[in-house]
Length: 161
Ligand code: MG
Image (spheres, helix red, strand yellow):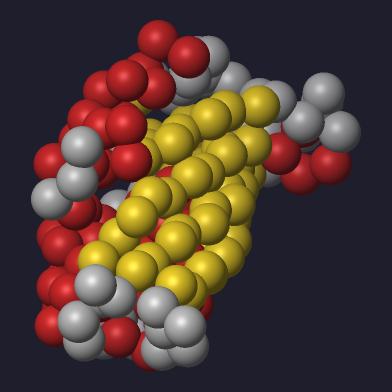
């Protein structure tokens, strides 16, 4: 079978004193909150990377970029994404498409969706129409709804020509 599918999930806390970076874009939260983490905490890109790795049963990003490793402190997740895509391609697989949904109460993500898709596609060597980015609030329910954090689910489909 020359198709593989993978899914990825990630969540990061919203805190004061951190930038809010999603899909490689620096956004503004109305209360000035940002995502906390060892790297830039780009929850969307992290979920996409885990979906890619999952499709080839290669583990998760913690295996390749452990939070205990000072090399990845403050890392640009887009650079890590390039490395994961290279790993997939090196194994002879091509990405058919990825899709994702970010769960965040605020800020409104809709105005930034196209920029996120374009930036992610560029880093992955894909067309924007191969990269789905969607956003939903959690109707003020749960940790995302209380703005304690943001989370993201992603899927990736790979093919081997
Ligand atoms: Mg993460």
